[in-house]
Image (cartoon, rainbow, N blue to C red; front, side):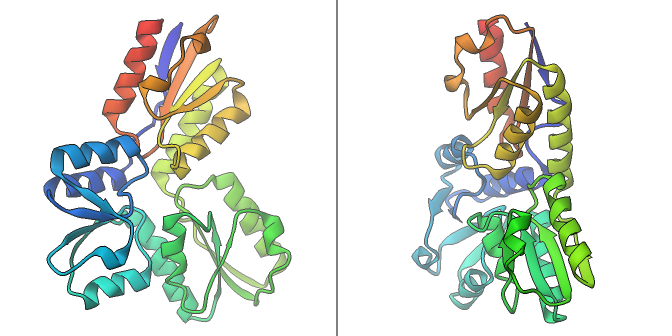
Length: 275
């Protein structure tokens, strides 16, 4: 069996930047998971004593806080400033962009529509910058019962599929007079998705490596499943099962943007041993 890695996979710019920031600020805490990868968070805790707190009120003056890649809500950022709590902002620049767009467009009187998962921390943060509220949707059908004005601004969660974003944009453009569409899907996400699809088309088994709570990894799984019958989403080499590879000719491997190289190498080595 041949083993082939996707042309583009793994750590994106924003995650690399956040990991470097965490490694440079030992004995600190992140507010919420720095990235959506449990094993990498454990490594940062064990090697650099970077802890994790889920409640903003747990932080006190004297603590050193790292803001996660997905960003935080505007009110929480204001709280940190008011309490004089030292923080290092590891928010991905590609996440800051929709935050800025939403804030500016809402100030100009546009209704805000956000394509994304309302429960995802990135979207909670982006929505908080809409000064008059925002509508968060994943499907066109969700827009049908929403009363919007004729001036709309549309942004997207950075890790969503471009094809799904186009459907939302097309619906709004056809129905409303003025629609400002901002494609805020990250280039690295887009490239990873294209590479995963290309590899999955010719592979007879795909291994997708990434956190089970990672949005961009879940998107890669869905994309691979569209063109490959055997797809497995795993977090580590320990989940690899020998029976998956019986009578396979080509095993494709890709990984989410929060998956470090050391995990990918371990998975690849495990598959090579079984092969």
